[in-house]
Length: 111
Image (cartoon, rainbow, N blue to C red; front, side, top):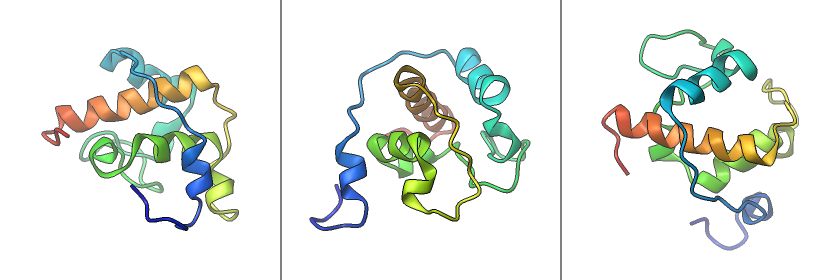
């Protein structure tokens, strides 16, 4: 939990994470083919993109609400960020959060 008055806490507070099941295969397909995230982000050590941070430990390191908020509007967090706003639907944001949590667990980073 962020301390009171932390930057952007209002963005995190708007997010409501629902438990969603997503298979690794479908999550990876959405991450790579449908949204193109793999162009910049790594989902396992020594894979694909290199300009964005690795995300195979994001489910361990980051709050689910933060992940959802950042996917929803990266420029709300940093107006100069390279990450595009893909206008991802609420349902797909929930799936991406579940997928990133699944990756963290599979990479030995259980919560």
